[in-house]
View 1 (spheres, rainbow, N blue to C red):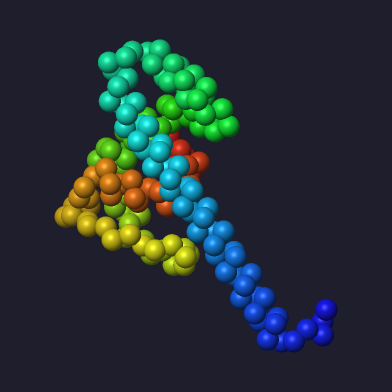
View 2 (tube, rainbow, N blue to C red):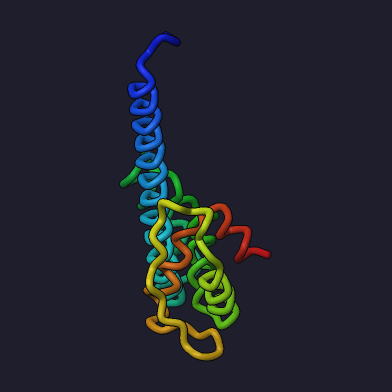
Length: 150
């Protein structure tokens, strides 16, 4: 089909770029929702585990896996990661990591809008849960695990 009209070739090229852009935006949105779910799970686990004891994570894993059999991420190991994730980014060190990353440009992520963060003096962030949550949703779950386990 090398004899195709040049305007058609440009149009199909542009259309392919739009499809790729939409796919990337969808993947970023799915990642953001997953990270927000893991943040909430980690927060809730942190709040509830002391009251419900050591078998709590095993029971939670069993109950969530049973209710959502097609969904991964409810193993005891991943639930522990959710707890560590929340605790890490809820710490002073985690706040500093997020503050440093917020100052870096998002030039490589042309299709992602940079959120409007309110940085406070000394790298502290306002509205801790919401701001950290928004900042870390830009990082894939596997990369977050590497960050808070190192």
